[in-house]
Structure formats: C-alpha cells, structure tokens
Length: 52
Image 1 (cartoon, rainbow, N blue to C red):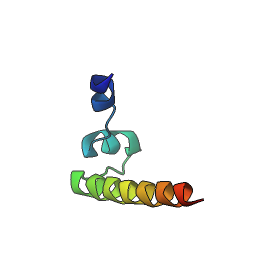
Image 2: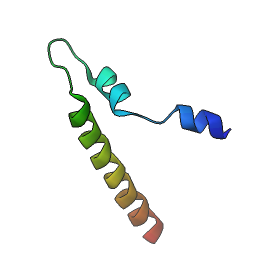
Image 3: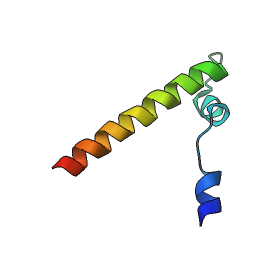
Image 4: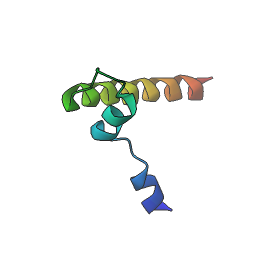
C-alpha cells in the first residue's frame, strides 16, 4: 500500500508534463513552485476543515 502512495506523488517533472500544452512548456523550477503552493494551500484547507 505504501509503495502505491509513493508512486502517485506528483513531481515537478510530472506536473510539467501534465500542464504541457502546445508551445507553452513549464520549466522544472516553475513546476516546483506551483507544487509548493498547492501543498501549502492543501494544508490550509485541511486545517480549516478540521476546525469546523
């Protein structure tokens, strides 16, 4: 079970591949910044949900 969770982590490379659309490509560091923001946002949302 833990192996499947590890395999589903979104890396900057995977995010860049997912968001690649035509001419616009995402650099690895841009993808890393987006992931950092999304993880931070997810923590806030979970905390707020658990407070209710």
